[in-house]
Image 1 (cartoon, rainbow, N blue to C red):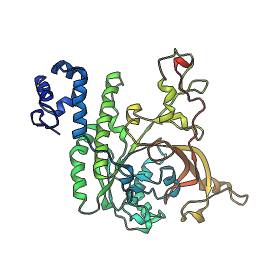
Image 2 (cartoon, one colour):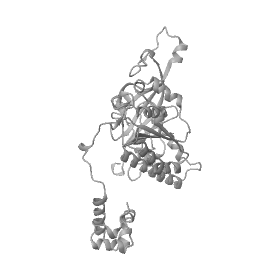
Image 3 (cartoon, helix red, strand yellow):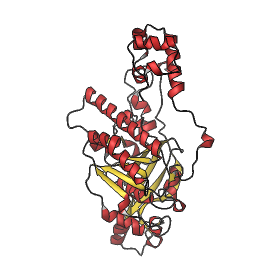
Length: 401
């Protein structure tokens, strides 16, 4: 957008002259300036500046869309598992940014790879008949694991999928990522429309791309927050313009609780309004299983404000024996060890149970479910439950003390 003020028709002569008197040449310059600067440079009053901004917004801004007119067909990508789909609000909604955060070994990349193949399958099986692009600091994909999905996953094996429809771009840092999102990826998306259009973009190890080697300071944290905002802005634009979903794989950091189990100390001096640690559990942690609230997604509040859905994956430490006769069905069944099962067999066959929680979502109710990872993919266990918040979470104001 670069509309010259001298040529725009929606401004009056007096408004155009005032802006040009302040040496504003196009609308973009006006939008970049704050209210005080506009008043100082143009000599116009506050209400006159507000009238100009209202005219700009109503003339060049996007028109509102009635929700009833939005088509939903083919805009949701299934995870390949009904339990996971249920806590995601039906599946992965296209046009949005989804965050998968968790510790190492929680299954973030496993779920992302499963989605990369699910993207290709027909809509009748839950896919969107598209291709996937993976942006990662790792040069190669785990091809053997992808092959396991192709032959063992109960949904993916019913369709024809190909690794040729998974595009991989090696990204080494945030600067390279921004360049890719601005130039390389839009070109790839346009070229893909001749075959299977790109419907899923996965950014793996997002934290690694943004983590600086030097010690964190207020300046470096501010720069990183600005970088996160710029990158996510580019991703939102791509997701909306090309109707694709973006999966961002994020790491977690430890949360240190005070001795009383709260996220902040009551001995601290009260501040105006809520403290960060008092409200952070609402958007950064869950407490559905023991230990789940001891970690939170990395990159802080700046990143939390950019994603539409935040999902936390956790290793619970619990193990159960999987009924192997049912692994080919839609959902594996767990069974208790019997007295006829040897101790060695019980240890060897025990499957690690993990837990997945939707912390917040714009398309569903925050909920959680247990899941396992096996040769056939990521599979849910049991029924989903509504997310449980800590009783200790509260927002305290001085006026309420």
